[in-house]
Length: 123
Image (cartoon, rainbow, N blue to C red):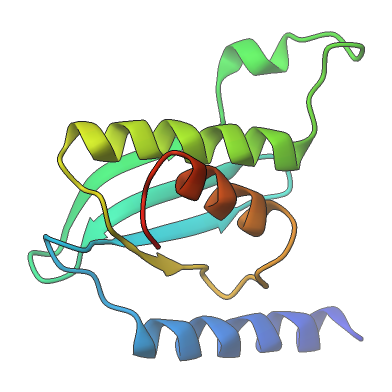
């Protein structure tokens, strides 16, 4: 599959997901973005058009780790999901809808979502 087709398919998936998913103040949208190195997430209230919380696993201290102590991307995404769950609970949010951003529900996206669920957030 060519790069053009992969990108086109991702954009189609993203449009399909965004057409169905919308966040409110009581049940905001958790938008996930994954780059080649890091995973980013935002908790968004679409009614007000505001980002409530944003979090990522992009930290300078992570870059200084040795290869022996290096953690995998999926493990890092899971830890980020757990941290986001704690931040959401501090704001009084216990439910959310998932916006996987056109990414397949597999790998880091699944690990992140599992981390959110382990943290006590209902998705």
